[in-house]
Picture (cartoon, one colour):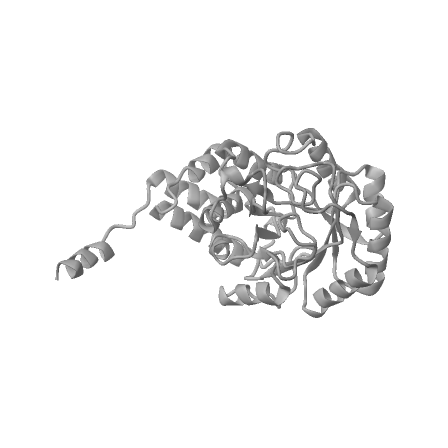
Length: 355
């Protein structure tokens, strides 16, 4: 009887939020964006507090209302494997990781076949990923062949580029570029934050959609650094942003820091969604999971080929999920992957940027 009494007390408890947090959430749900101080306040919320779950609900409502409950799937194709000399500490495709000792480029016919599979399964975009020293002219050739083979929008994920190279990517058939100022840039990578931001400006200048994610998040990253990356995405008006956690590959030098959980990532996805306000056309999370789909995410990345989180040459059988699986996860969470993409055309139920 005592346990029944305790349960009765619990279900009648007050769910009134802190007035300060309530005000921030209401402001966010007006799509105006929130301030850096307000985002920091949300990041400090206890993970299991009622305020955190209210935050996630607010972000969830925003995404489903603005994006018409669309489930986006941008099909990642990693075209090569090599021991990259840039040696980013969180990447498995490096010399220092010691996993891959020889260069391997997947045959073009394999890449084209993967692209056909993506198109047949209604992928909303193809994300073509290379390592940092992959031949740029070869990348252009791959884009031109893909453009002739499929009608799915092409997005590139490669090194920093110049204006001339950006224009060449457009001519080769690419309509967007994934490019992130990574957490730990200049500390866990040899690249300068300023150079990465310069490339973002190049993408905006030449007319390529800029795709972004706050990544790769680990327990070692400060709230200040994470929030800074969220506001960078807002400042440069990313087509989509979101949050990806760092995955520790076998032997990773980042293993000592551990990893954040999917629930912790979902909370960050929600904060990022309120920060972005009316700017994005989708909101991403990686790797695919359900928690963030209740916290403002609607974009997944199914994968084939190589990726920087695995110790295998091909993702199939590794950490990557197929597009059939990512679509099914979205359906289970009442998102519809069969709707048209919002990222490349104005199909938003509520295109707030035109109000």
